[in-house]
Image (cartoon, rainbow, N blue to C red; front, top):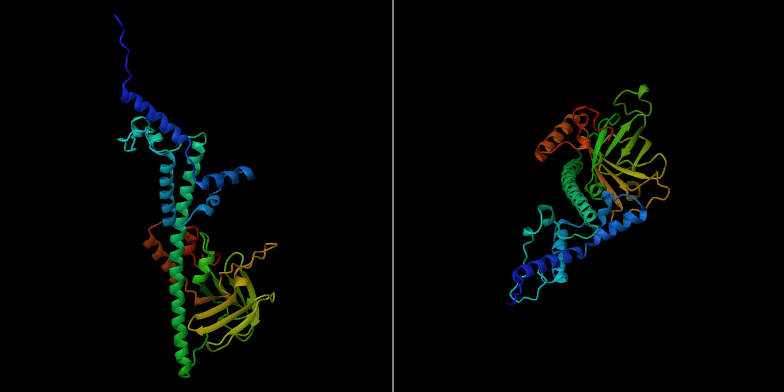
Length: 342
C-alpha cells in the first residue's frame, strides 16, 4: 500500500514566507539621512554624539512631521507588499504582533546597528523636544520685550507732546541708577536658556567722594547685553531736561558710539551698532554679524524697580506652571541683587 505524501499546510507556508520577508525588509531598510550624518561625525571625530549634533537636521515641527510621513511613504514604495507574495487578494497588511514581542513590534528596523540607531533616535527626539520648549520660551520672551518697547514708545510720544506744548520734563538723577534694556530684535538673534538681563548702569567713578544723586560731576556707565557684548563709557555730563534728541557718548576704548535718548520719568532709549551687539572680545577671529541683522539695534530702557520685577517674574512662573529656570532661582526672585549678576 502506497504511503500518502504529507502535504504542507499552505497557510503555514505563507506565514513562514511572510515572516522571512518581513525580517529581510526590516533589516535592509534605508535609514534617515540624519542618522548617517551624525554617525559619520561621531566616527570621524572619534567622540560621543552630542545633543547639538542633531540641530542641523531638526526643522520646524510641521516640516519635520511632513518629512516623517514622506519617509514612511518612501519606505512602503521601496519594500513593496509587506507579505512578499504575488497574491492579488493580498492587501499588503501584515500583523507582526503575533510573531514579535512588545519591544520588537515598536521597531521597524533590525539591522546589525539597530540598537545604536534607536539609541540615537531617542536622543534626537529628546533634543527636538528641548528645541520646541526653547522656541516656546523664546516667543514668550519676545512678547515680554515687545510689551516693554511699546511702554517706552508711549513715554516717547508723551515727551513729544510735552515738547510741542513747551513743557519741561526733568531727566532726574542718574548716578547710582540702573535701567533694564529690552529689544525684541536682540531676542531673535541671541535668545538661549541662559538669556540674561540686559541693562545700563550709571555711576560716579569714585562713589566714596560723591553723594547719591549728585550730578555736579561727570558720570560713567556700563552697558551689559550678554557675556560677550558689554562695555563701559564716559565720562559725560548728562542733560538735565528730557529730550528726543540723541545724546551720543563714546565707549571708554573709543571703539563704539552709544546714542542715548533720555525721555525722563524713568525711561530712555539706547541705539548701538550691530558690531557692538555681536562683539566677541575673547575670540581671536570673531565672525562677522549675520547679514540679516539690523545695522542698528534700539533698546528700550526702563528704570529698574526691584519689587516690581520680582512680582512680574512670580506671575510669569505661576502662568507657566513650571519649575524655575536657572535664571529664576530663589536668589534671583527674592534677593534685591539677584538679577544684578546676570
